Image (cartoon, rainbow, N blue to C red):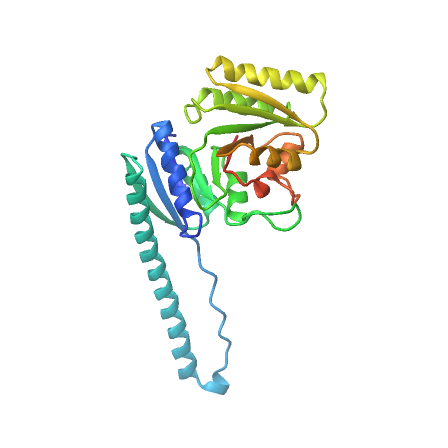
Length: 285
């Protein structure tokens, strides 16, 4: 349980995924592995029995051509994957990562991550969709399935360019999940040395203030610099607005809980912080 895995697919966020994974590997002192999963291609359209119209021989030729095209497509995808992994390793090495490997697997991404989870310390993924309003778009299903499937931390690159974070924001809601998230951050070298903002959206109550105070104390005891923010309104509006004022930041939150934060990350509603976030998101379990 030590590797950082960068899950790359050649799409727009790939460079950001590599850079975030390299940054994470260096911070954690962990080896980096670049992973490319070749998903099973959709089946070719079925060729019906048209032998009465075009003859048995002609139908056989068509089937052979379809099979050859499918084989060629598979070979091209594998070669593209090998080249992508080589380029990714070179980029990670240029970023200063001393130890990198490349791996290509066939199958579904979420199932692959579950298979290699015992070796993983962190997964880094890229998302290819971002919402500008709560109802406009769904989260990349690969990212959502991965977050649901694995128990290791997942860092999601939400932009096409990497910018090293200057601070991080932890989404708090007073739940046991939020407390565990703070404890995990305090115990890890990943974010050590960066100032923290503990943010809670909701009513200004003594319980809310106490929860923020207790969370801040955990970080202070671990040597972090931390401040708290109690924001009026709903999390899906208040937290993105706060993040936009923080410059190069990273959002940290737990994947499961029993409050609005849970629904924002893994619920069935379309309004989620991960869908709306303009900064990278570290999801802890």
